[in-house]
Length: 249
Image 1 (cartoon, helix red, strand yellow):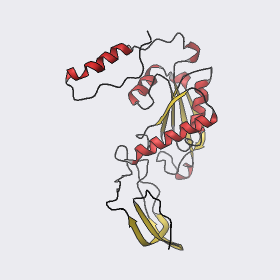
Image 2: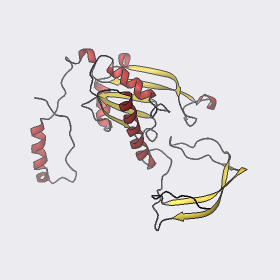
Image 3: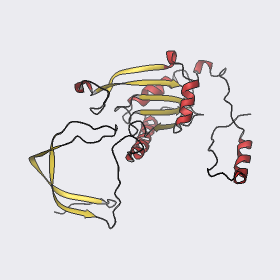
Image 4: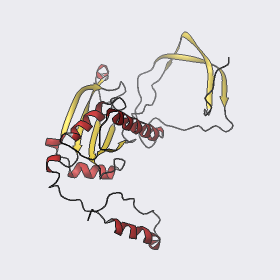
């Protein structure tokens, strides 16, 4: 057989699939960190050739909870990029960043969007679009909006915003009957798993009171730059902290 092989492939398995040739397989580890669907008949490939590079790179991805599941990181990065692309095509303004955290079921469980608020209802619009855009509609349970002074990739900052800018009685909404996955272990009975729900969390400064909202305590940029220059003097093993938001005065 003459089959095209992707130029960047490390290992290629060539073979034949025959109608009706099935063998029991499973259960297998999944991105949720649990074993998935029960053992069931699956198609069998009759391997005819194995192609590989010299010293091929083979990942040791364990489908388990993060960080054991190494592929969770690139799943999360790829999904974040797809969500950003969706929001750009939809035309949502003010988006400063999106991150689907790998610890949340390889990026499928939680999405954080950083937003520069521009008008009343902007945060609610962003939450709804993030929850139902093509790249994030599948499974995502937690959609959190934060202001543009919060880095969505930094869970410490996200937790700070949740603790100081989110008021549960006013800032939480739920979407019901949304698209879920048959691999969601929280859903019983199994037949209910195609459907799910989503929590929309507004962890932004309240727009109607944004002018009166307390100023965050932050370093001045000049102070931070002085610290960077002097960091070698301290003879510390760790690199200097990364700071992107500064005191405005």
